[in-house]
Image (cartoon, rainbow, N blue to C red):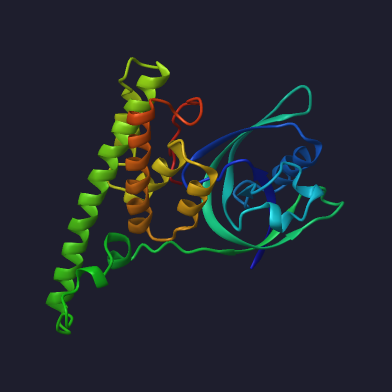
Length: 265
C-alpha cells in the first residue's frame, strides 16, 4: 500500500496513453512543483482517477465522488508558463485501486492510499480462457497437452486481436465520415493500429481510450485485468457503437481526435 498524489479528471487514463495537461489551479500547480522537487527518475508521477459525480471533489466525500480504479501518470515534460501555470505531458503507467482518500491543507491537493493491480499476462490468462479451451474431462496431465492448450490459446488471441483491430478501423472511419473530418477515410486509424501491432494489451488500451465511450464503459475496461477479456468487451462495445452510427447516423459527442499510446515505457 502506497500514498500517492491524486489528480481527479473527467475521464479515466489508460496505461501507455499520452496525457497532455494545462495545470492552472493553485493546488495542482503545487503538485507539479512538488514533483519537480524530486530527482529525475525518482517517481515523478501521480494518480489519475475519473470523477464519478460532480467536479469539485473536495466539496463532497472524495471516496464517493471518485471511481475506485485509476492509473498513474508519469511526467515526461513540464513547461512552466509566464503566468505561473504549467503545460505538462504525461504517459499512463500502472493501474491501482483506491483504498482511501486523504484530504489536508498541506499539501492542498488530494492524496490516496492505493494498492497496485497486476495485469493478467500469463500465456493462458492473456491469450485465452483455459477453461474454454479444455475438453470435457480435461486434458491429461502432460506437458505436450499443456503446450497444445497454450498454442490454441495464442491462436484464439490472434483472431480476437484481428477482429478488434478491424472493428476499430471501421469505427474510426464511420465517425470521421459523420463528422466530415476526412471524407470518410481516416489515415490515422491504420497508423494507430500499426503502432501497437503485436501488443494485444496496448491495442486494448488504445481502443479503450480512443473510442467515444461513456465514462462507465471506459472505467469497466480500465478495471479489467485480463487483456483477453478487455478485448472481448471492446469487440461487443465497438459492434454496439457501429450499429448506432449506422442506424442513427450520429456520434455521441464531437470528435476530439483519436489519441493512442505513443509510448509504452
